[in-house]
Amino acid sequence: MIELRDVSKTVMSGTEPLTILHPLRLSVSRGQFLAILGPSGSGKSTLLGLIAGLDAPTSGQVVIDGVDITRLGEDALARLRGEKIGFVFQFFHLIPSLTAYENVAVPMEIAGAPDPRTRAERLLEEVGLTGRAHHYPSQLSGGEQQRVAIARALANDPPIVLADEPTGNLDSTNGRHIMELLRDIHRTRHTTVVLVTHDAELAALADLRLVLRDGRVVEGAGAAP
Ligand code: ADP
Ligand code: MG
Image (tube, rainbow, N blue to C red; front, side):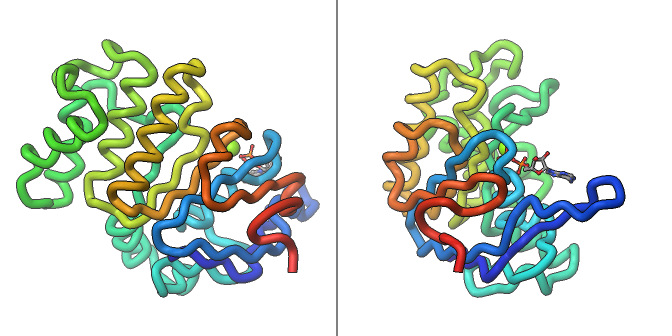
């Protein structure tokens, strides 16, 4: 479902090239759950951004569901992302002027998805938020906001969900509940999940683990060729 072939990322830091991700290979099959671990600054978000096609690699290919996304133009890439990938962020990224329900329904309406209202209601139910649907993000706890963000990420029923430290801004109880929710989604929807986390205990729930340090895989799936 996700394949990285000798993917690397080098950026210019002033006048010097700086390699923030050294060439790595990675293969995640349909329905697998991969956890990416590593200290702050080790390249985890960079790697997730490359998988999502939000950023282009300096070398190598990123293949999503059989399509080499490094060869796609902007429009085709945006379409593929919309169809195949749901993204969950550490800081939720909800629209503050929209209710929980609207945060889920409005992107579906804009995309012209069929029956956005019923689907938004069902998604909020799936993430356990039925009673809070008409609250604004500021009226919700961090854990509840992240549930809304997860419902939104699932709106197009994507085969892949990417989550960048989704529990990083939550207390341990709420973090645990969000992790259980992601695990339930993985199990019931057979979604391919890639989760970036600092928490080794949470990562233990995954099928595959990859540990990054200074832009290199030091342990697990995808160790340097
Ligand atoms: P992590 O998510 O593991 O904390 P990141 O992938 O965000 O790490 O960043 C890895 C390293 O690359 C960090 O040292 C960061 O400062 C650096 N970095 C990320 N993006 C850029 C960029 N566009 N230009 C320069 N340095 C960057
Ligand atoms: Mg990061």
